[in-house]
Length: 194
Image (tube, rainbow, N blue to C red):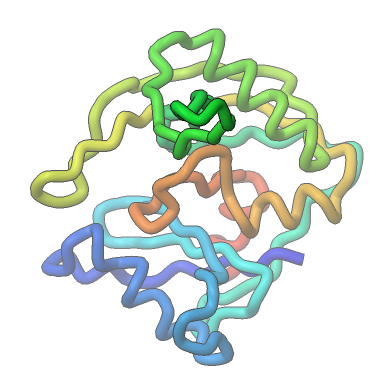
């Protein structure tokens, strides 16, 4: 089960602080616990929040992705991948390097990684287009390489897919509103019902 809620966006709040404010909709989460939600801007004034936990917002509704259904989706992701490596120390021992993020510039690589990610989480991508490769600047000094994914996903395993919708992905940048997959067919029904 996935809960979604639309909440008003205070435009005076910087985007890098929105994720902190959204914690107020999850009083059951203790300070220091992992963030229990993903979010994205629906429009200039509205934030869509998705979680396995029910938010306290009065617009909170359960959404269900059904087995065997194909849904349109839209997601904005950070287009980086971690590169790991190792090196040999002077004493001959091998050490692992700290992973570093490398920007993905090739549409085919982004598509391949997204398809693999969805398949591992109960969905099969039927169509995928990569758009709007650019730098996103949520605050001074931060520039995140992002892109928008637009496509169709077939739900093979609803439980795994619901977990995926609630956690977002692929990529990092969840604190900046990246990674939430928006499925208008089931999430717009939520808007009409709210």
